[in-house]
Image (cartoon, rainbow, N blue to C red; front, side, top):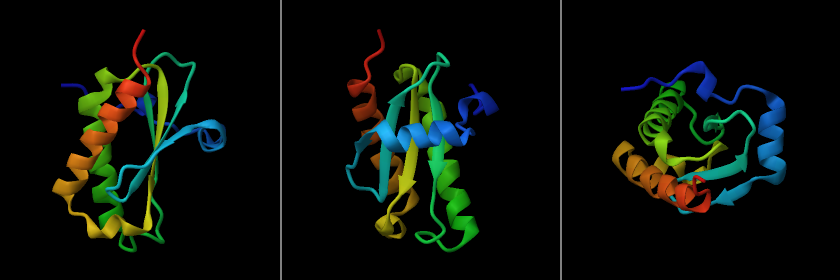
Length: 118
């Protein structure tokens, strides 16, 4: 069982800017938007942009981030060398953790088919 290491995290603001500027957006509901862009590091990375405006309490934001990181960690073998940025939407607080996990699985399968491993 692998853990979510520091290397799997997008931390450079330039990488976030690149994703926002030229990434492919996927919006399938579930209160989130997933942006994907090719990277040069050789493995998939995850970036999170969960707005305080959408989830007021820090415990709710942290819980959502934990769910997303864990889901990414379990499905990382599906992805090619891409950066994935997950954004929150205003309707994020209408979904519970089970619905969020189900919608993440849908997002991951969409991202995996869009960016086939070569």
